[in-house]
Length: 109
Image 1 (cartoon, rainbow, N blue to C red):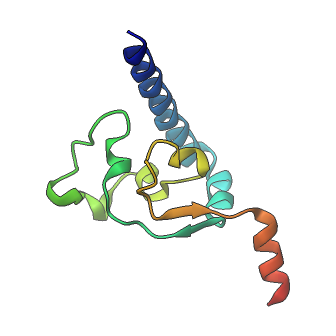
Image 2: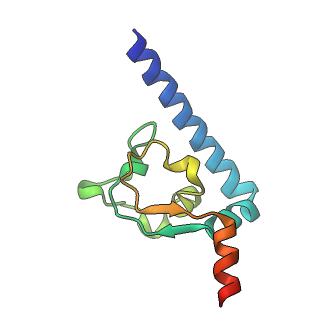
């Protein structure tokens, strides 16, 4: 019983994340761009982000996106911030740096 409640809460949180990302990429592009400047690393093509809440219908074999060249805005921007990495079990190649670290690096240049 307790395990099923935890599973439901996790799925609700993942769903909230999907709604949050949809809103941000369509209505708060400035916020998204600001956060993406803090993103480092690159996609490992693990497909974990394509399985948040449910499996994306466009995810093909070997974790390949069938619509990669015309994918949705929220897919292009994923992850927007640390909150998006929460359920990926450390498989994502992206991470975020502190804005102060970026300022220090720019000051050195």
